Image (cartoon, rainbow over all chains, first blue to last red; front, top):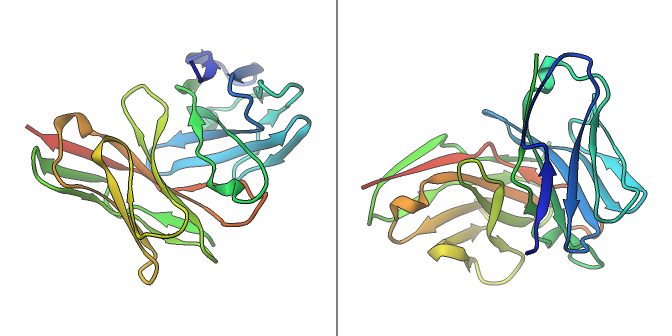
Length: 117
Length: 115
């Protein structure tokens, strides 16, 4: 089944304790992206990657890191989490290519609910 | 600044009645437009998109959306609502430029279909 898999789905942690949220897709998609969803703010893009070793900042990158060493994986790293990073996080991927690349449909993971105390 | 507005936090409609979920955008040029739906404890799922051509786009589960360039709107519609349509709906835009992967999402509208 074509899917985007995120882990963990739920996590409670404490301020300053480094954590990684993993994201993996099995569709050979070139484009991958991370979003956070907060009430009243919708989805905001954190980072995106257009291909292996190519990443760029979205709208809210502060406090996050990413890497794209393999095509299928795009982990989100919180080096020193703070309470304002408590949120619902989504990884998404899409097929990229030439031409109308922005028209590609995003496939989302099920989400990772993170609480930072 | 580029933005997407969903003016209603919640829309209530009786089962069997038509529904409309509104979306307007402020993006330069001719963007691509999308609707996604989110069911509880799930990720977002694609419903439909507009690239070019006919202003009325048909999508999954009987949903359609009407693109209006002069009003910069992309309202989601369904002729007859089902209780199972109750969910959170997001409008999104992507600028029509090759290599730009900027998706801008609205704040979401919760649709409640009452039996």
